[in-house]
Image (tube, rainbow, N blue to C red):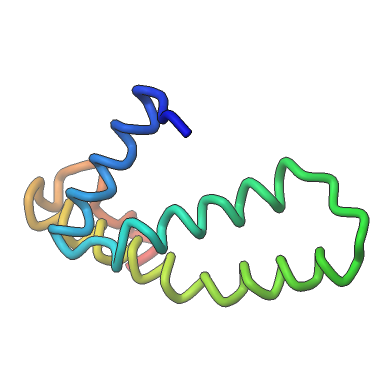
Length: 92
């Protein structure tokens, strides 16, 4: 399978994020993205398959929120509190 230019760019970005410690691994991120696509774009007819996919999505929540926290901390460290990445007063 040949990747599009956008897909290659996305993989390059994920690879850099992995090297910076912002995500655990490129492979895991791609796996999560594939699950997202399956849940959003496929019309699952088998209720058991749908439930399994939802359960898998639930298992991703800690990893995805951890990645979000890592990215937010990186942004604040590199661009500071005045950036658009700083927390709003409500979320502090």
